[in-house]
Length: 246
Length: 254
Picture (cartoon, rainbow over the protein chains, first blue to last red):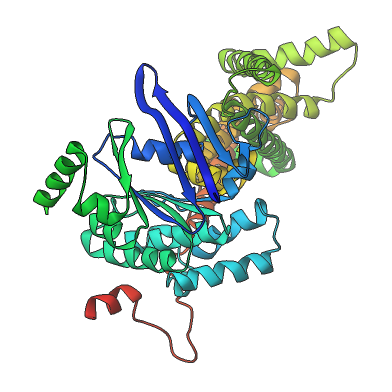
């Protein structure tokens, strides 16, 4: 199995509140996995645990045959191999668009500014933001910010790109432009792990859908299995609810 | 009568007034700069996330404790007293006579450092958590995150408070006359001691203080505006024609 990330028995508790319980889950190379579920089901926490923005309280994360949660393991080196796109964009406010995509390459990957700018421009073109390289984040719309954030993550040339509800903070009319970029990335063979409320996107783009409920993976399978023939009662209920809301 | 005296005092003593003002400016400027650097270092150290175990945890706790004592001591005692303790204390303890100007700069620096470290910490804490997370997610460590992402934003936010410190320093260097530094207050006292025109002499000094603080405030305002950068940005030209249409609009039209 060529799993990029293999998660075994992962658990996370905030104090006495158990948010993730015994999660087993893996992402293969080139795979697009969508994680769906209601708010508070632990999907964002799972993503943040994978990136170690939250420290898991138990279990293992295996990456290239090594357990990342080992104390001696270099966390920052691991993190550069995972790109992260946040719900709130989190572009660096003190840098313009180009520098947002360049600063990590120079400081972390130790690329020269010239190389870094070339790589940044390549990915800014992919997301259609290459005309805006001189703009500051505060001058951009939400959708534009998120596309720059995607380019910033791509510029680090990660093994996996993690998306934490990338369209949830956007105005409805801007959701489309971000989803379009993500779809193109998915088709280009990038390994992606997407926490989303966009059922249409999950259904259409993903290779595998994971449904989470109350801190456990309740059901996983192909989009067809999950959306058209869900086995679990709670999956059916969740899908019923999301359909009603639209 | 008084006006005549003012003119006479200025005419006879202007070099002394200017030297005093220059010394005041020198001490407060260097003191504020060094104090800000001290504050920045301490602010960064005090915001290092504490590791869960190991030697590093103990070391960090110890450093934090020492820094807390430093801050509490210098915020909790008057600068005039610190000046006496440090200047005469160093003479007593190590038997060496500190240069008065060096002593003055030293005292103002560490005093400002104590205040600035709390101001910097406040500035760092006020930066959105997402900025830290984004930097960490890219693989930056604490210091890279601070230098490249957080501090530039924090410094912009604490600039008004730093300007405050500078203005306070310009005024508060007057207390250093107790260790006979030849700053503006000390010079004015000497001038007034010669001519016995206290009101007129100190009136001149007050105007000089006001000019210094006012100028500094204006300069800092200008720096703030510069740091904010222009409100507009240029689109990158495509060929000879400027691309006016944004991708967003194109998509809507489709």
